[in-house]
Length: 432
Ligand code: DSN
Image (cartoon, rainbow, N blue to C red):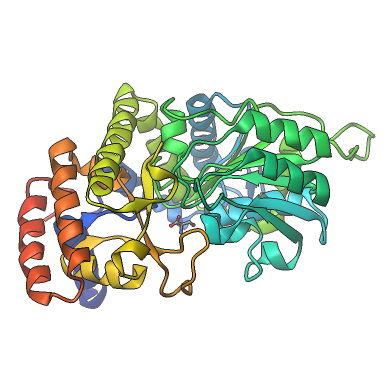
């Protein structure tokens, strides 16, 4: 654990780090995309590797002095390949959005059609949103969920794909509580001649633990973040189940086919990024090592159990969950029957140190800054050690606060209960 006292000469930043650590310790963290890393991951992040430039890849760098970081990066690659049982891994993307950008750059031409999950139904900005490069440079079309089921109808995906002829189909989301039908996506991609990308940023840790369907045998390329259910440092990765010659017939100067792995690597560097963050890559390696332990599989089971317990408890209190429940670590709650917006609910819960994010629900009539829903995830609280009883307690607090979103007295009272409760689940106890 990096010692925060080492920052004592910079009182301003030191006190802000202390304040953030205190906030993380005392609150109930239900943001579905967050988690708490181990102290070992933090230690690697705060290491001397941040001082090193290493543009290129292990053994082929544009800087001297890379012997050690080459070993670090190779170790991260090997562990990631083992974790997901894949042939190829690139651990350099700085984030999930940059991993996606590198794949788009490597596999598409400007103006090519992409087919992704609608952002307003739970998709991601980097899958073709008009405000993102992916919607400005390419021609995005979307599938979504059905109004009555809240689930993706694969026949509709097929219909859109046959009509629009995308070059790339993307499965994966930021706020979809259900597993994915990768074999059917594969069949559709094959029929229209598209590449298939699975963005597993949210469920990656649950896939690695064997709790959800494995996209690697079906999808050409996988992208992910490393900091959500995978519980590593903030960052991105790209993988392929198998390496193959590129499908466009691109060859080297000697006329040899260029493998997809080389095309994806060049999409990351020099395509999208300069120097890799080797301190983050070291922290990724530490996290992948942790995820290879049997305890990580048990953690994944508990995440899913906790999510189901909270989902059932909220449903019993009259909350409407999009798709009626969850298969993974998260749930999307449509608050329209409660007469409360997502923004109001986020603020009411925040006053009691329960952190969630407001979230659009499918067919939302509110703006993205207001929204009709909230998204809740259990990855972070499961890391802190909670189980079934604690999920039931959280359902009580959530319901009390959302039922009276302007009651500041109730917010103060529940905040005290939350803070006392969290004292039982210490975070980084070695840090003063
Ligand atoms: N911002 C992330 C999330 O919250 O799901 C996705 O990039």
